[in-house]
Structures are given as C-alpha cells and as structure tokens.
Image (tube, each protein chain N blue to C red):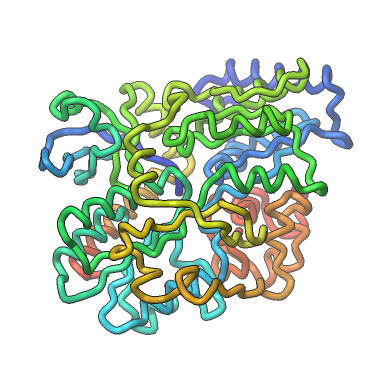
Length: 96
Length: 379
C-alpha cells in the first residue's frame, strides 16, 4: 500500500489549498499538490506526478510515468488504486 | 510467473541474470550457502513473486521478505481499538481498504461494519476531511496507517483541519517508520542478512540518508530500488557487487524518483505534526524502540487517542497474543518460509486470514499463496 500511481495534473482547482485535478488512467480525481508546491502551481499543470493516497509525492517525466503504470498494472496495483478511488467517492456520499 | 521474454527489455533482463550468476559464483554463493538479501518493502515482495524473480535468479540468492507491509505488522490490539472507536455513538470511522480484513481479537473492521458500525473505506485522508466537512455533527476519525510514504498525507490533513477549525476530524495515528525495525532485525543474533533492497516510495519521502547506519554501523550494503522487474534485478546486481568488492554503502538505483534528501515539504509536515513514541508494537516482532509516531500535543485536538482515550493514549497499550499456531513472526524474520507455518492454507487463507501476512497482497504468505501454490508445494 506504499506504492504511488502516476497521474497527469490537468488543472489547479484551489490555489490557496494547493488542490488540483488529476487524470489517473482516465479517472478524474482531486489531489493535493502540497508535497510538490515548492514552485508556482501553474507550472505543474500538464506534468506527471506520482500520486499516493491523493497527494502528488513527486514530479516524474512521461516515460517514467508510462513505465511505472505498466509495472503497477502487472501487479494489479493500478486496478486496486482505481477501485479505492471509486470507493472513496462512495464513502463521501455515504453509499458504501 | 512471467518469463524473461515478457519483460519490457528481455535482453537486459537476461544480461542482469547472467551478471547475478557470475557474481554469485565469484562470491561462492550456493543453494546451501546463499546470500541473504532482504527486500524491505511489501511492494517489492509482491513484485518478486509476481515476476517469479526468486526462481529466475541464481540459486545462491535467497530473498528474505521484510517487515515493510503496514497492514501485516499491525498488532491485533490496534485493530481492536479501531473497532472500539468505530462503535462509539456518532462516529464515522474512515480507513484505507487494505486494513478492512486484518483480524483482531474481536474480528476485523469488515465484520464490525457488517454489525452496523459506520466504517467507510476511503482512498485518501482528503476524503475523510471532506466527510468531516459534510457531517459537522459527527466525529470523523481517520485510521492513520502506513510508513513514511503515507505519513505526510495524514500530516497535511491534520494541518488542513487545524487551519479550517475542523474539530470533528481526528486521526488514530499508527504510523510507523522503516529504519528502526531494520536496526532491530540487524541486532537480532538469529538473523542472517547480507544486504538489503531498500524501499522506493518510502525513500522518495525520506531520501537515502536514514539508511546510512545499515552500511556504517552494521557493514551491510543497501540499494534503494524501483518496482519494475528490471529495477529489482539491477538492484540485486548492485548488492552483490558490493558484497564481492567488500563494500558496504547506501546506493540509489531509483534516483529517477528518489532524491538523496527526500521530499522537503513532506518531511517538514511530518516534523510539524508528529513526534516519536518511545516504542511501538509490531505484529510478529514485538515492541521496537522509537519505531512509531504520535501526534504532537499542539495538535491534540485532532488526536483520536486523546479524544477517545484508547491505544497508547490510554492507561497503556494492551497486548493481545497472536492466534494459536500463527507463525507470522517467524515468517517475517525469515526464520521459516510461509509454507512451514502450521496454519498456512489450513486455518489461514486469503479468504479467511488468521495472520496478517495472509491479508495483503504485499504480505509474504498471501504472495506465496497467490503465486507459489498451495501448502506443500516447493517454495
């Protein structure tokens, strides 16, 4: 459960709270940029991040993102993470 | 098991396997007298089994599966305390899904949920914060679990709750750290460890220097590694090369993601919110000095231990003995293989786990079960 999953940062959603929208294997998820916010946030839009439990933990290049995603898919971890994201959404609505 | 031909770069994999074999011969490593390499991280354990690396490498390599699976080292008493909190009036208890099936003395969180407790699986502590915002009349508790990769996320969440004045949010902190159990294992005279494969994503947060003692005090090599099969093979080569040359250093095979000094913002958040406990209990390993974190008094309003009077915040931690016949401790320290546990595949399967190592895909027993085959199969 200590593995991050690559996602692409698509937009800043709340600059004050360092929140952004990310695309993780086709799933849109709001994430925190707090760990990588040591630069102007707008520079992060379009970049790839290693996302762990909703936090962008490291900025990585596109090739690294693709390779990591392949390894995670092989391990079944990518699917597990996407399912956890869907569960999280249900938990917000209290429909689990 | 995958074959080398299915690797992203089969030629490189074959080259690395040949390099491993050459180095094993040079060192004199054999099936009878193997080099013991501990992969610390449960993600690496999973990858080793998934890609069959333990079978592909020279027989002179023996992988010892380390304590780096957070749900596997969670003591039963902490699961019981989670249930105790979750069953309190007005509580919404939130947790990563991984923890739902870990057995405690009173069953698992999954079973408590079935009994009617409001327990919700979330992806992120951010989800728990949002649940707290939407339910101001309820107490929302997040089960803070995991190593240094996960610790920053709950630290940032507590900082956010403090900024917003979200006082119906708290964290039941069970965060643990990687270096201390490794120190404990290295100090155990029954352990034979010749080198380590260091965790990738934990190191992305803490950097490589927290492992310096492994090389400097204990004279053992450690190589921080990525998760692709090629990364792991490359790391084994790097460990063996150190052994062959009589070196003991901290090397970083995963520098493309792991900075030498880690992630400064995450480290700062951890230091702001958490402090070390004098000791913390690990399932199978017992109490280990300074191996767990607790919430600093400044953030006591967000500390579920203080709020609910449980865990190390209560009179004292309770110890709940392991189930009869459960050999998780011996497996975790590499003294026996999972298949040698009397309960493996009998009283303990992934569907009905008795011990925590059977719960998570990162646990050695579950990995054996999934990829190694049934009880009695050659391991």
